[in-house]
Length: 214
Image (cartoon, rainbow, N blue to C red; front, side, top):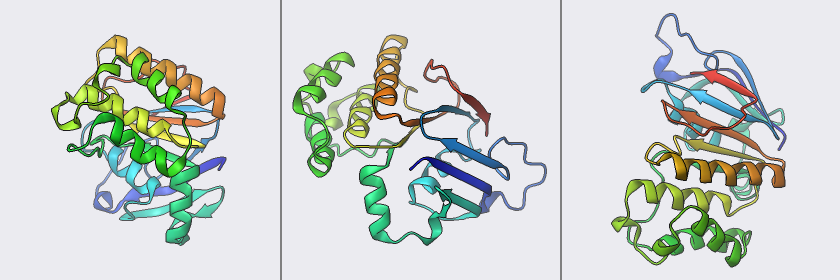
């Protein structure tokens, strides 16, 4: 996948509002593979909804979203399964980890399906993010910032053309945020992937190709 295009897209719940001032909603927006984007937003402007629309979890929007010119409303279940396995990775704000499983088990659930990352690589990511001593700890006993790093590693354990990260560093200190940003940039170069980051304040310090206001 090389292009994600939004054509006059707008959450249905916003349809009755007047004077929506946004670089994304009700606009023509293109996300290109190999480029990085920051979407700055305030609470309640629909950034998490945008991620859910693009990932195919929700369709309560007006307008059109296309992947390489194909309207995603027409995709079959099988097409979505393939896209989420090979082309599109998502780090949701609420993380969607399994609290009863360990950090390692949460990551391995994904990696077993994709068979993408080698154990040595996963262990290196844990180490660089300062949670190598938490690999066998249950997610439910970890801080939210530690969980964010686990969810980030899990998101890397698949091939992707685009990765979306919804407030990925909201609970991280500057050092861990930089470590995550460095890994993300490396993966972007290695995979020639596109990056889309959403934020209501704190965000990755990356050389973004475009900054959009939601």
